[in-house]
Image (tube, rainbow, N blue to C red; front, side):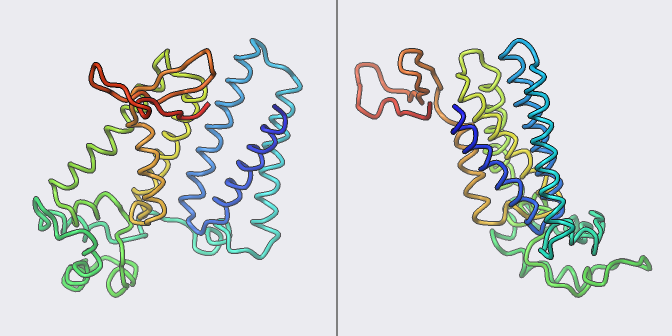
Length: 269
């Protein structure tokens, strides 16, 4: 319906602008890539559903993309806002200089099986920072005397704080959820709306996990909440689709002979 399309298109536009206003330059770049992937998927799916590409649809899609890019460019270059592009023009972007990864690699073996403990990175790191020998190489000054609350590398920070055993447990939760979501996405019995929900969940997770290679999004409480919810969607129960009422249900495993009101929950239509 047109009003629904207008509502969700407006919401998507607000999200795109919000990503642009986020001070993370890497996050902005990843967000743009994910947006393009989603836009192409929507365009191809619409054409496939109509069995032919309507020239008007192609033109409308192109105009929408052009308007979004124009709006982003206007805020980035004409406004005086603290945008990702503004920080990029001033600071540039060199992932290799963002943090002393070699110190993290020195800390990881000492963490051992159990790690130093969750949330201890900022207290453990200074001792390694003060004693690490960079030799005669020229390195950024903040590598030697800057305060690091988190490592700009979530995976190494997890290994340092949680150790090998804890990191393995987190890997099972995250990688297993993504693998399960991918398998459900390609199942034929997966409903139309659920397939889109899984696709967007997987895109969001992949973007966050990519960003974690050079930053610490997984250490931020609000982002952790979203990640766990999206993993929950991917890990969820057995999905089925009822043609009669047009609703998608999450069917939970119930012992034979038992039935309760909560056996099936409406997941979304």
